[in-house]
Length: 330
Image (cartoon, rainbow, N blue to C red; front, side, top):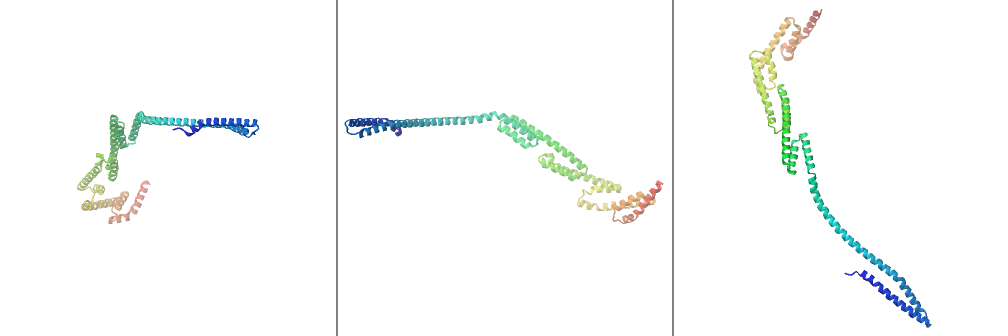
């Protein structure tokens, strides 16, 4: 479709040329009239028209040229803009394709670095003894990177290290539990086993520790009960009472009730023995022995009649022991 402005610009020159011809004709006619004394008005009008045409024609030509230049510039700008847009579209397409290629290239380029980072992460988890996290990372190495053989080696190493650490910790705890059981610290031994069970609830050896401790406790209880019966049978009163003090921590209320008669006889016999020993020490003037035996009676049998008598005598016995010591020094 033809541009109207371009058509107007193209038709401007013929119009001014026609105006110039008309102005010249008017000047010629006016000059003729003036020569024949018919007036100079027409000559003046023709001259003015000629001047007007000569003045405005260059201006119109300049404006037309400027308009044509502007139109050309606009056309060039439009053409350049269209070309640039096409270039930008082509460039964006290339960038998109290169980005896809770049992602794949980076995936390949950084594959080894990612694998090395995964190795370091596995080692760190192993160092922190977080075996489950280390196994998860080893599985990722197999599934994400496809290094099945290396992942299998790492899993074996993780399991071996875990087994070694678990065995060491279990053995250390077992050693401590043995110390507690030998010292008859059963509650401490059981607490140690429960702590270990919280850490390794699936370990077979650890699972059976509480029952093993209870079995040891019951075995020790049976041993004490047997030793007590043997001491009673050989009439070892002091030995029987010492064993009874240890056995008392293991007896149930029913078991303690069944042994009351035997225990009463033992303490009665021990009190009689202490009474005889005290009397003999006083009679033989072994004041220090008498004081020691009297204090034992007062401590172990505080509510007995003999304990009341002994407490009344202790001050006198101490005075005699002091004088005896002074005489010995002299």
